[in-house]
View (cartoon, rainbow, N blue to C red):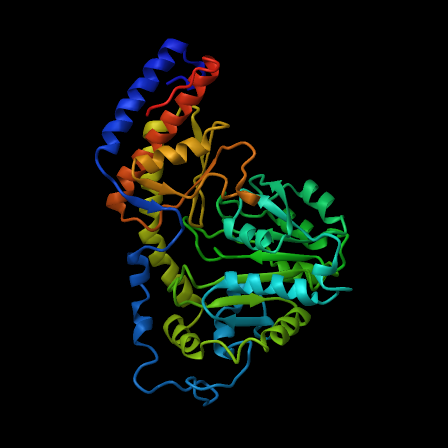
Length: 436
């Protein structure tokens, strides 16, 4: 099939009309499916139901003999819980904090504490600077951007390259004194699926920064979430920062939200001793401690790094067929049309789709009409504004496979209809083409 842009106007009209008929027939099926967020499915959550039975009976004592039901203990979390995740985080237990279920809450709190108090190495709180800016690789995670927008932190987008962000641009921006930090999802990035190359990680650790208290917000949310074998690995950012003379640069975050329960997992943090002491001191005013019983049940269920890997292999068996269902629909309907390109990630939770410029909002609108709710177009960019209006995030994990197959067909039809509308409108000048 020739690409749509190469069709004659008459052929493009015929193609659009066929798409409109197919779309209307699909819409008449009355599908209703929410694919706005990358959530685990019920089948994935069921994999960890044994957690609900732990700790069993009255066995609620920790390895040191203390009672997990009561106050007390380290604000860094149980020593046995920190040991469980040291391989995943790439840090010794002394440099790990285990908290309650949302790593996003830890990221939020680190930013608020930095604004109010500064971080180790700060001359003053970030809020007292004339301007505080974050480097934001795009497309990226909308909830990262929402925190910055909430606190009026300027966001500067930098394009992803397939090996991570454009490092020449990152290094140029990081040299500016007002640039205080950078968001990073270094492994199976949300939503592009990029894994940062060794060169990218090394340059981030060693680059010169204009702000002496510059921080990498290193959200390694998908550290264990591979879809292919062998699992991709990234360099240890904490070790590289230490070796480059920037030991306090990286704040590493993770969670078990997509490993055990999204509503009842553990949030994870690793950093230099100075950063850990800073966060513990800041946390001490807002909490007596995290949920020790939940940490204990995770330790007893997962046991060790090998236990984590075994559980993630079971997740992969549930997830991979869903990604394949989306690829199959896209290959069938979209391949060779030039209407869209899409990723086949090695891990993570998303398929990243780029349609032709100026079409993403229309495609998302059409998908909604077809009964498939997608994240709003532009959400993967700061301030919700995709300058090319082309990026769409697909989240295949939560729906049942039997629902995902028709949903993928509906998304494909929405793409073809939206793109053919756009191409015809461009050829016809001010004559709009619309299926409604």
